[in-house]
Image 1 (tube, rainbow, N blue to C red):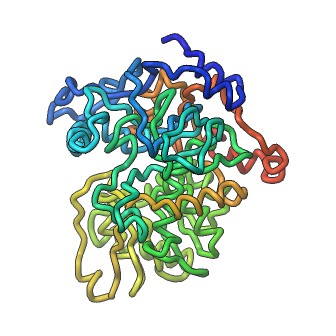
Image 2: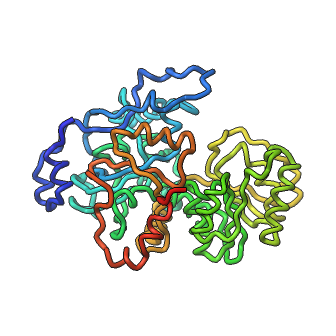
Length: 437
């Protein structure tokens, strides 16, 4: 579709007054699902290829609510919730939109614009927005909550109507424009490019809550932390947070190439799960894993960082030390877990459920990123036109770290403002995940 004057002005770096003067387009380009394609996969399909259902094309521009902003998206990123969405699993996301539509009819549409990460420029603000202005450069956090719910003052993740933006809501970040609540906004780190800034918030904040936050595992100095998928989107941030906090990371990966990437990250202990020929499905495999961790580190993990689910959960419960914790935020290999409960109750272990991050936790991890203490895990970048292929790479686990998507940004490496900080950190650290494995 033809680029609009407002989009062109954002890309050109126009002043806020010009952005405010230009008309908001009636439609925009977005990666989206179509409601009439729900059910297009058979239950027996071995490969539910997301390229069949994830489309890029024109969708209608919604009206803006009083507490929302319209962001011109320069870049976004793929998260696993986009893969689930395009597979229509575990339920079609249109069910979320229909339910949300009872209170906000804008979201209940025959198309669903996906994406739970974004970096861009504010081009409109609702009448109730006070802290943000047209022209501000921002990144988005994924938690979409009702600010009038009392529990939000305690912990937004406990809100009864908590929604993941771009998954359980419409108008997400894989698009040229996105509708975002003001309480999702954070200042873009000035030393990062658009695509580097866009890839962090969902995974980095989730890892922060799991490991550091008051409602997670509350890691302390010297804790041994086992991290599954340690070079993935979540694990890459988890390793950094463990190292920064004085913990001892033990990263689990599946190939020697990923093991080498972990070592370049400064992870001193690495377990290659491919060495376990018998797998991790029973206690024999769990014992071998525990023995390997003790061989390297000398003790069992105080914390196990879980998100892979069915394939690993039994092993996680087993290898955590007496009195230790398994903190879990997902189940990418399957939701139905099996573990030996004796190893939980008799050894006084804990399972901690963790979901996303509240606004304060997002602010804290974004501050670490802005200070140059946590770095992007961006490994590959696709144009928006190839969003389906980007999601396919994540679906097949053909990536490390995060996969970025350029929206309005015409090329990579744009948007950097603080070149001095970038030089102090060094390109080797900032682009570590972009080296070929």
